[in-house]
Image (cartoon, rainbow, N blue to C red):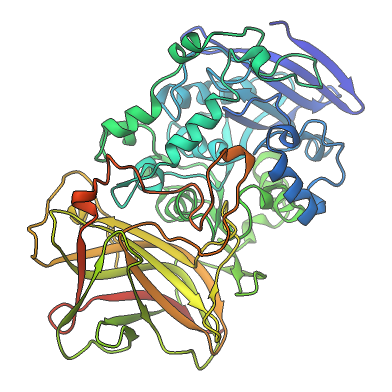
Length: 580
């Protein structure tokens, strides 16, 4: 492959620039920078989605939905250089930034063996940062920006502390491979299969003429060679098989997760209230646990990719990067540490600055499960009772009274359940829900799925052991390092993490908690997005837990009982936010 160079208006573009890393592999990058002789701050991304595959062509339905609903995302740009989940250089280069996109090893124009999220990839990104920070056109300050994969590896590489990394914006990116993605509560999530199958079939290096052409260069965006299926398979790991080989949280996952105590770089972490199942937890855990002295948290709603490209998202990122990469005294250091787009039941949001997470003024409210009335009560039931359900059925729902005043719930949620099973294990799926006065459920546009409930949580009962040092009342933490099977009929205490949420619930609406043994399903018609193939989105997006080998019916299709009362005080802990 030969490097190309163009000057288009005020932008100098270099295609397929070589970045040679320590094991001799050459990574390929595109560089978009101001067409002058100055030194500029760098925004860099390294990932799998093929730098030459345009957003609007590779992810057409997502692009069309975004620009229809949010026309500002494509305004002010020719959109000729748009790519999935990375910055649009036409919106950054005019402000003096150099934008570098690197195809990760084995993807796009870069050859090599694919191992997603591996230490090898993190080391590659480290070396790309150091390369970018020492170019003649660089001011020596490198920032990382991007969504999802391009955010996940920010968390990873930050723990390695590359000297030229000056700031980063991990926008909706998981930090904990095991808890955030592969095994929710210890239960295998099959979205790993959906994601990997999709990307290797579209952007693996060597697909050549099976893929397509970058219209800006006329070159094949997955490289000049067209390899056979066997050759392609030999150039990648068995990612989904590797995940299945590691049922517990071991070094395989530790090596592919953030090391919070080693992260000291300034960052702005962005999350999505509708991101249950993948990225939301990375933002909140990163903000709470990373060692950085200068860190900010932003949480929004809407589709996974949208907010990053809106004027709101771009302006927020520019204020942050202008300060840390350019040294601009723009008041960013006076920015409160937390910025929330508080969600309302009609799908609108109200922006609000806060100073901590969870909010210091939270009125932690514990509602107790009452199996006699199937209610959520302020007080513990005086009698002991239980309610049983078929694990593969619709479960049981406990209802709070209709609210007599508008109530905001914003923050992490947890539940304590006393559970028995007639088998040696049980999977618990918890769904926090809101219903309007007519009894219709209020659902929201999620990061992927358009019919997302308020919040979700999961736990495999045999993974109930707590990490006493890391657990908090509102966020229990399980080490997932051993399996403790149940004795059928015995009662066990389970502390269950329910991922954070935000919703302002009007008077007359009702909160409810559903406890079931399978994924939530929205009763309406499912949606399909082209980049997820034939996967139907039924309320949890692609984040399903339906692998028959992980959940054999003779174990997880039994009968589960929730025990309540004075001796078994099953409850849910809610973060109620009083008005200021």
